Image (cartoon, rainbow, N blue to C red; front, side, top):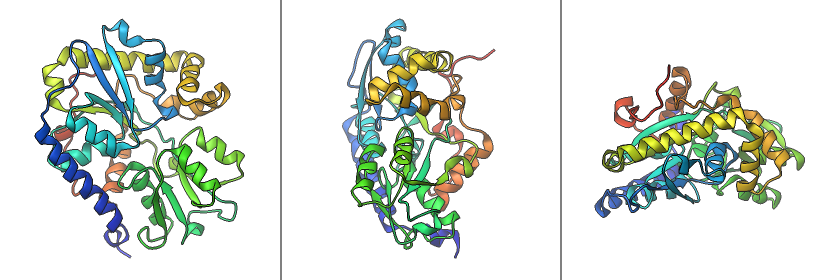
Length: 330
């Protein structure tokens, strides 16, 4: 069956359309930031161990070293986060790349100003009766939200296994990894896409690892930093100091992983042992210089989005990427 037929999903199209309408409406609410002075409101999509540098910066108040006060707000997925950015309630977001790209396609002016989280940290787990993606036919598959990266990746994985992701599996919007793991234990979901530490917990519960993202790609834009140019243009020094702090926190995470792991454990309310195990999976894929994944990895990302009808067309980098705040490299 042709790719474009494989990925026609009424639920995904409706989800994206709803987000687009909301984003378009939010443009009327103004483009200025709600915060002032040296304060920045930072939005995160969910709690995740892969956000270790942010938690470290908060725990050690590295923001203060750069003259900033940062207020962190955690949402229930990238859709809610995108709405907050576009409404001006959030100055800067650290979330999936699908968020700003979907906003840009909806006619909103947003820019990615930092990458660096180039992790292949996702993996799929299933109940003991399922040993492969193909065996998940007819089952309920959990994702964070429809139209999100987890949705895109799950549909791509299903199609790569020869399934029609629109009819052979049921994609269920279940929120963050912890909530979806609970739904799995309750029998509501039979397969799930997780990041650490839920991958560890899934294994402890006896679920089968049926696919790893690293089996599909060599890099992935797990998180990017993005916002509205109106904020960056009005506050270039503040934006630069924010990125410099995040870069420093990322380097500190790599240099002092035990310290960073404690911050991760505190923020995610998990054991230090599980935090360390989680970080060991992806710490080598942190890049303090803020780079995006390799060209081949970005090609794969766009292929997934285009085949999954998440994006209409590949956008030129100049339309969504602003590199002026990136740390200078020698």
